[in-house]
Image (cartoon, rainbow, N blue to C red; front, side, top):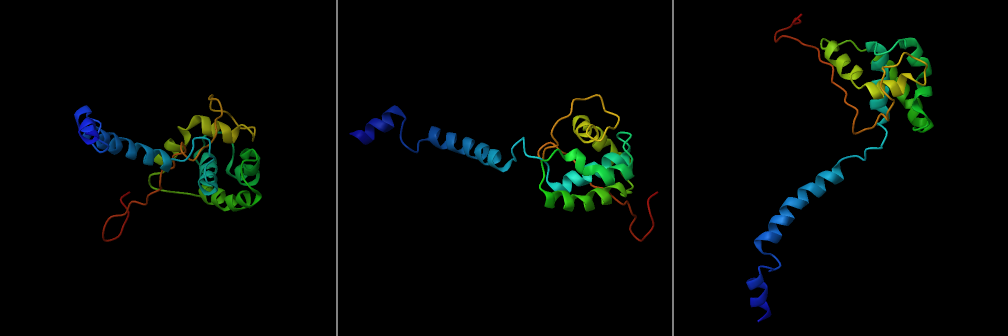
Length: 157
């Protein structure tokens, strides 16, 4: 009798509506778990490349030499001493990057105005006019550099 009552009311434990609800909610939950929290600072290697590219691309008046020597001042104590030391290599490397798609790389970096402001403000550089925000792992976008080559040798340019 109880078995019939559940089916009659449409409330069987694995009826179509329950399965549909489970199938819809499960991917949403899994995607939510895979995303880093919004307030997590960017990973030290990505932050180092970002700071180096801010100087390399001229997003502010901070020179490449100044960024190399004073980058730790822009971190605001959000990274451990070991991460700050390891970050130096990424800052140095990014300040010397030269790619065929450098205009695209620089446009992507300089367009993240609040993050650029967060880096140059503690160093006393020219601001972007935006309020500083956290350079977070979720929001930081870095474009890969590309060397354009034609098959068989030679460069496209």
